[in-house]
Amino acid sequence: DSYSNRVMNGVTGTEHFIEFINGFDCDAERLRNAHISTCILGEGYRSWGGETSHEDTIWQDLARVRTFDRIALAGQKAAFKAIDKKASELYFIKISIEELLRDLKGAKVLIGYEVSWDEERNTDANVSAGKFYLNIKMMNNPIVKQIT
Image 1: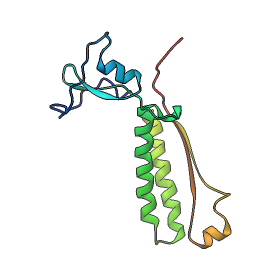
Image 2: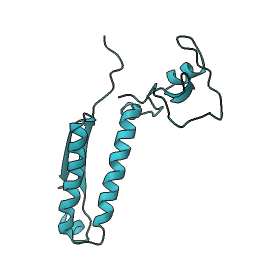
Image 3: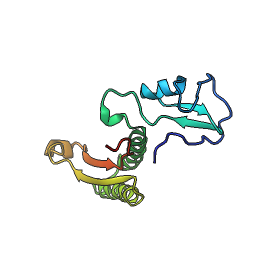
């Protein structure tokens, strides 16, 4: 689901007032049209806008950015537990990442994913030095923004 137009529980005010008049040109709509998410006052404080102003269009979808940030943090936590352990522990890191992604696919957050060891970067020299590389490819379930 989109992060836009959701009540932000616990928010009681903002530092700067953002003018919002539904259906009219206003501060909130100008920010949204510039791909800047903000918050508005409308039946409680709400998030408004579901995009970022990133130049790369793949990172303009706020839902995608938040999803991938959370997955990256989970992967970093899992990888941290393997540092200074035997290489056989890497199996469990890969499995735990696959389980997380499988759960996200089941919850319809992701459409699909692929987790594999990087054959090009996991050279004999890197493996001997204790350096391992894992490739994670995934596609989130995008938010429909236009139907024509």
